[in-house]
Image 1: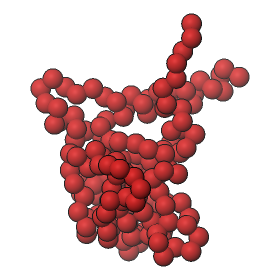
Image 2: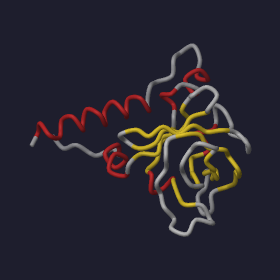
Image 3: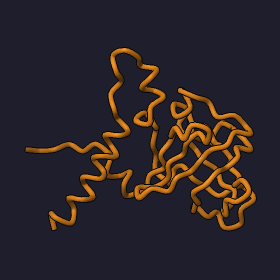
Image 4: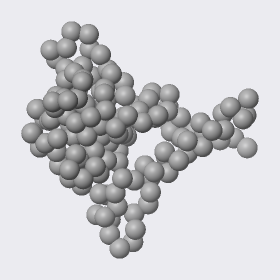
Length: 154
């Protein structure tokens, strides 16, 4: 049993380390723009169907999406909602992405901007299309739960 848990635990630890790389002493701003500073949340808390989607499907396809609307996420303090529409050639549907405001602190995303989505084993990586610099990770719910701190009794 331990051997089956170990690969997943190592992958989760690597993901956590990527999301928590400490800032270099020379510049806090440089760490804020690094991939290691990408914010994360669970898919169920972040990705929703568009308001005109009949099935509210949470599935996302890798590819490029145009930001067609930016707003405060309803009922979520300090959270921005992006409405993303697939660009030509991306076989997907429109969806919304709720992300913490801190995810956009290093570089804002404006209406009309293109966001690149990569599908990963742990969920989805959202990046600025021009630089491929990630700014947000939407993690599979079970992966996200594994990142939560737990008290250890020795």
